[in-house]
Length: 378
Ligand SMILES: *Cc1c(COP(=O)(O)O)cnc(C)c1O
Image (cartoon, rainbow, N blue to C red; front, top):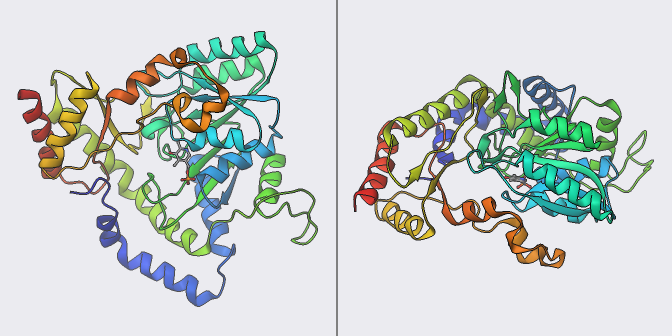
C-alpha cells in the first residue's frame, strides 16, 4: 500500500495529462505563457479571490507575501509551533523574528487564545514590531479564521494564510486560500492539488499587492522585463506544470475532493471508538481537503508500537511532525524556552498520519483499520 498513491491518480488521468504535456512541448512556450495564465484564472475563480499569482513553490509563495508587506528586521511574525518548517523559515529568510504560538489539540491549528497571549507579550516587551500572523491550514483543515481575523484587525496585523495543505478545504462556504489578506498554496506532488515537480501560488484581492508579487517573482521587473525596479527572485511556475495542474484541478473539482472525504468518512466509521486512538475532528461548518489523516495516541511508546504493527501489515504511516518548531536546531538561536508551546510538544510525541488519498479503496481502509484494532487488542 502507498501512503499517497500518485501513480493511481496518473493511471486514471493518463490520457489528458500526457496530451497536456505533449502540447506544451510542441508549443515551444516553456516559461509563463497561456497555460500559466489560464491556470491562474481558474485557480482564482475556484478559491474566490480576485488575483492568483503562481510561483516556483509554496515556500517562495510565503516568502513573496512577506516581501510584499515589506516585513523584515525588527518585525515579529506569529506562526503556529506545529507545522512544516517552511512556515517559519520564510520569516527568518526576510530577517524578521518568528514567534511560536501553541496549537489547538483537536484541530492541530494555531490557537487563538495563545496567539493573544503571545501578541501581548511581544507588545509588552517592546523589542519587536508585531506585523503579521501566518495561519496554517494543517492537514487540510482551515484554521479558525473568524477568531484570527478579529485578532488581526484589533492588533493591526496582516493575516497570511499558509494553505499549502489546505487547498480545497472550506469554512461556511468560503474556500481555503481566500481567508488571508494574502493566502498561499503549494503544488508539491503530495499536496491536495499537486503537480509533477515544484509549484506554488499566491492569492489576494488587493491589486497593488498582486502587482508587487508579480514583479517580485520575476526579478523585480517594472513595466517590462528589463526595467527592474526592485530586488526580486526568479520564482515562476513552469508551463508544463501549469498544464498538468489544469488537468488535475478539473479532476480535483469533479471527483477527488469528494472521494477523499469519503475515505475520511470510512476511516471514522470503521475506526469508531477504539480506546487510545483519537480521530481527527472537523468542527461544524468546516470541510477538510485531507492532506493528511492524522490520529492521536495516548503515548509515544504506543505510537511506536502501532507504527511497527502497521508496517508489519504492509501499511505505511508517517509522523507529521516529530519536532515542534521551537525545539528545532535551526531556531536554536532564538532561545525559545521549552515550555512555551505545551500542546505542540505533546502532539509531536503522539500523532500518527495514516495513508489517505482520493483513490484509496475501501478494502485498503479496512486493512489499515484492522491493523490498528489488532494493535489495540494486544
Ligand atoms: C509543503 C508546505 C510548505 C512549503 O511548500 P513547498 O512547495 O514544498 O515549498 C509550506 N507550508 C506548509 C504548511 C507545507 O505543508
